[in-house]
Length: 315
Image (tube, rainbow, N blue to C red; front, side, top):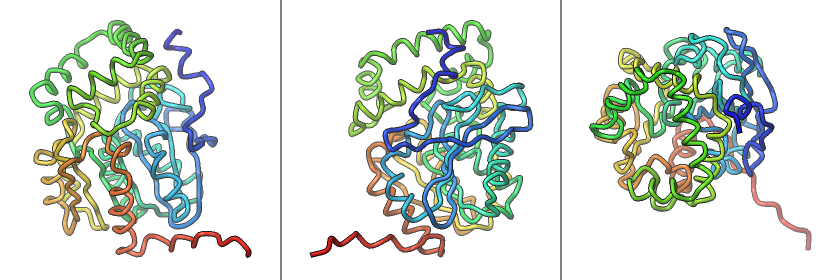
């Protein structure tokens, strides 16, 4: 399969049918796919780099009963087109895409939940349009220069490689990853290296590997470089909305001691959920705990409706 064709292939977004069936045009002309689901106070779910809506499958059926969920795909991911310009694949551009989605959906204000690189996107969104944000939940993600803290000493090395490798070679490497994703080996090796949590099912991880066949490598490369250059450190002390920072001690991509805990201390009044067992695949593993913590956070701040009572069958 040619990588250039992969992003165009029609895909089923997730087993939960979290379909991004609407589109909005970004500043650079790229068509960005998004979807609206459920009923209640609006909450935007912001994915991580190389991921799509399937990452929210375990939380979606619970949250869609209590929130209006807005899901979307970054450029070059899922159903969205590749970025039409280098500037369109930056963290500020992704934050602007989010604003355009809110405009198109007719939503004035929303809470933002950002996973992994999505944490940087929601913090950048707060920089750009704080008046439209009701709450922030950075979830297993950094607030700046992701590769300075990710993967121990290998993070900076990876950043240097991504910055210097020619596009053609990067695309070739991506092709190897795509082909390897058809096998079970990446799952097994990932667990042994601690990159995939011990309780993440092969089925969930396989959806991630399958999605790699749809991403657009040049767009991904530019986004990775932008994430490494980006910092929201100056934004954190100015945040004036309820914030819950979720971090995990077993997450090699956003270590709690280097990312989550310092972020919480820099945000006035922010709450911290620090999970000793939390991994970067916690959305596949610890969704019960995450649901209780995040929904409880929204309840404390009046940002959720009561869950509907279970249907009672007539006697």
